[in-house]
Image 1 (tube, rainbow, N blue to C red):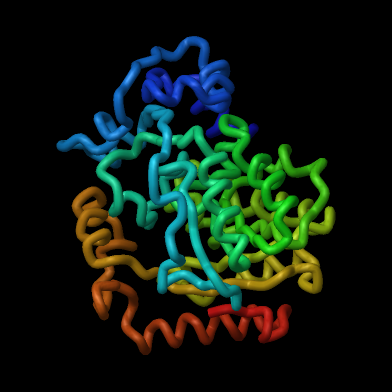
Image 2: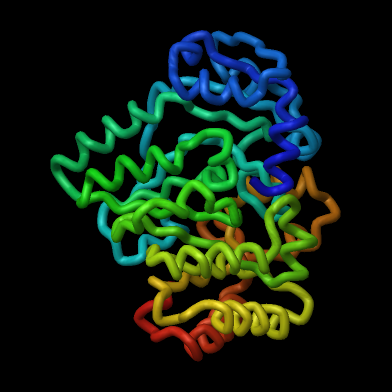
Length: 336
């Protein structure tokens, strides 16, 4: 387990809030056993803590609390229009955890939620039952690490292994696990599956250090990616979000070159390229929290309630990234 995760286990979760109903679930017991020194506080509903007013997301990031809850509804959501479906029909996402242990400056979660505390829904089996009902009628493609980084929390939750067991029994289900983590211990001894995709988000080295606080380095991400590729896993590379920074072409050009110098391009499933985009309302809240952020202070263009770079700027960024990536990967494997 990496340094940040060790720190969380040792200090950050000094208080754990648990819904009364959640005490009856095996996952609750498993998690609480990992924190014998934490103070346990019983709740009727997680929203008593998570949704209360006058919270500061950035301040809470310094010492997030853990909340164990039972999800009662909305196990699945239809995939967002701003997200790529990679040619898959019936695109959904699901949230078995709310919030992430990393502190990326540009993360949309700080625009969605007022609280940075981490909510783990302990009744994953109910989500699986909901999926099984839909699978009786059609195939599904689900992003399972949407509101969090599930792999980074695997040492606490074990949810990735549960998803692995579930998808291994359902050939008409395909899942994507997106991550910035290098904590692949739980996956190393598992047999690769054609319908389980590991997707690593990669950023220029200096940018990652400065703006993706807590996340592992580019070197560590590439090392983990390479190891899983060599074991035969389906691996997606995500240059997304691409963010306009000083010396953009130099920094991102070096990122692409380094990525494909270290990885065997023929073994990569596909590559995702996308520029930074964010809901108007989310950006408003994010700017309030991070008044000095150069990334968020950029004079974006707004269209249909979504902020991004101006169209001509996006074209220039995408064209550059596609050209650089195209030196190593065939066009049909590149998704914009």
